[in-house]
Image (cartoon, rainbow, N blue to C red; front, top):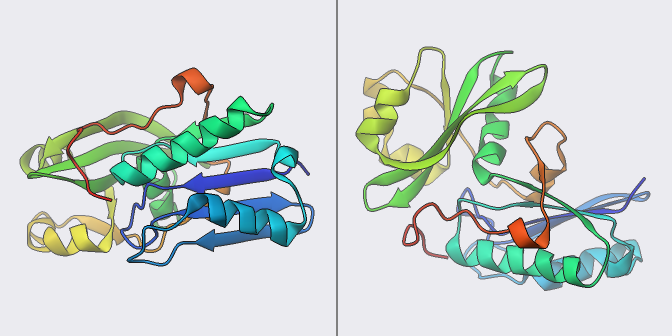
Length: 221
């Protein structure tokens, strides 16, 4: 088995500032920064390597979600991965963070069912995209956008599931109930979710590995 490292700074559910997962022949280990702290991604990865008795140059593949999500967290995670690319022949796979959120709803979804993840983009706007399960894989139907509540609600289709973090679910509870929306609430998503081969990955070189902010002012840490 190749040695794989997954890192995330998107903090999709608002309770995991940074997280990392390491896969070796000895198994899979996951570490996360405590909620309410800024965290230290480098320390998390260093600790994982020490626990598995490997050195960073042994890592063959890195996976990362590139946003939308925490502005600071995304910058830190992407810079960390680009640093690894600069000093070794590591293969990097990246994925839209909304796809990671959508994957969380897949156990509740049937084949062909559409899943719409939502994140708070601040200032009355929301990040959203649309995915579907096809052959067990998560397929992107509509790319990530930042739009207002009315536009998002107008996009909803029958049998579509919406997945979002707890704070947003509480904020939009009345509106979603009026629309009889099927809501899945995601909690404590970590880099372990990035180990799934069901996500729509793309190969990321240093020159095209950039955070997807969508709106430059949308988020805090």
